[in-house]
Image: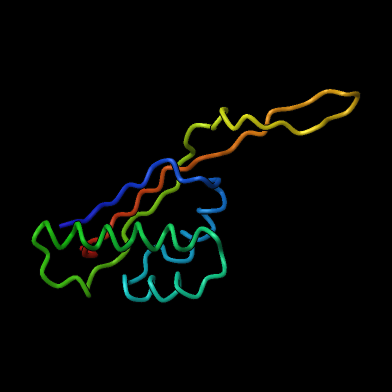
Length: 114
């Protein structure tokens, strides 16, 4: 049995989230939560929230012993670029460029290693 959590449209880039996901991939859930708690990254609380949601979803599916779960898969895919930020940055020769805010779709899957 697996528990899965998907968080969409996170207001951060997927490469920043991927660095944090590399720390917890393949670990036990308790160990992953401890790693995330002490990681000095702005994206760590977002990943922790997704991991806790995946564990809760696994509990709803009927997995009784949630302490023995492992992080099976976790991915950070690129989401759409927010173009309605309505802000500009000055460029050379009097021009201006739009500020593009990146978003991320985060997927965390927990389950038994079998």
